[in-house]
Image (cartoon, rainbow, N blue to C red; front, side, top):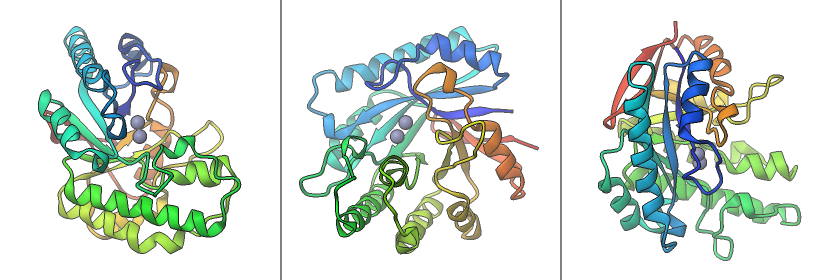
Length: 272
Ligand SMILES: [Zn+2]
Ligand SMILES: [Zn+2]
């Protein structure tokens, strides 16, 4: 069974997928279902459409949830980004609808002068020292978010590395952050939250997960057992990207159950 807990529809500023197309792709791929989790980027809470576009996402998702109820499980969720920028806006969005799942993410860190999303920062010319400090702030922000904010699934842990290392070719010594990463994992376990295995970096040739297997193994070793898999699709053709690769990787670790959410309650499904 394949279930994708993290997708974006055209109600996200950076995505194009019509929910109808996500549904048809899910059927074609033989998937059991997916969650629509459009962006709530709290640094953009002042945008007059920020709130209404999420309510539109919810209504649109509800329509297709009903339409496909005998063929697919569709969860209507939201991805709360950088809730620390505006915790009251995050709480208002979460409280406004009976979401099935709330993802907790950080895409922009509270680094003075560089508070914009890291996808918009060119890391080419920064000193190694700047990048080190920047990453420390990312992990600090993610930790504070994990500790203080309302969410179900902690998403794409280590995602700035995709830009800093993947896009701009900078070298980062990830071990420097192991202590902070472990503190975040411990919070996920202690608060009974779920860790996402994000498969957006997977291609036909390579399996690249966020977080990576070393971090996943530490999560499992400290008693973490709840995991979702999400492709973070922004277009329908990416819906199933990496889901099977993730299941193979997880099965190799003896994992037989994964999690999805309805009514903000975790439910498990077998991958045996
Ligand atoms: Zn995200
Ligand atoms: Zn996302």
